[in-house]
Amino acid sequence: MKRIAVYCGSSIGASSDYEQAAIALGNELAQRGIGLVYGGSRTGLMGAVADAVLKAGGEVIGIIPHHLAHREIAHEQLTKLIKVDSMHERKHQMMDLSDGFIAMPGGAGTMEEYFEVITWSQIGLHKKPCGLLNVKGYYNPLIHLFDHMVQEQFLKGRYAALNLVAEQPHELLEQMANFRHPDEL
Image (tube, rainbow, N blue to C red; front, side):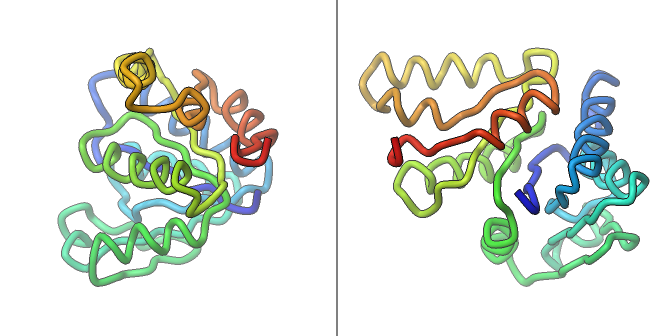
């Protein structure tokens, strides 16, 4: 994997554990020579993961819509900052530039971006790994929801398994490195 897109909050969250996880993920990406593709903000978890990759000498590509550049405070010290016209363009470029996707804790925007890439994987638009960095059990309710979808027969178990889950960055990146899409098995 050359680059991984990370979706996460533009705020730090209620616990310093979230920021520490973002820094750990950034360090792990840089140590493995994997570039970061993300939403381009210098605030919150977004800024923390980007700064960690940069500090460790890694590549960081930020993609931010013009209308959010001021609101999310665009990070101007990246390897490359791409300003686009829409959220759709942002998500499309993030998908094209990335070999995998990680969702860290975040809000509705993080969920929307992650759900789009996991859905695209399910319907065969890509076969890239998708993972949840489950810091402090943040994603436990979502994991239970996926289990419920399977139980109620709205989602096949093989597609629920598209969600790789780990509590530590190195564990998640190992799962992603060894990922095989269920349609290829």
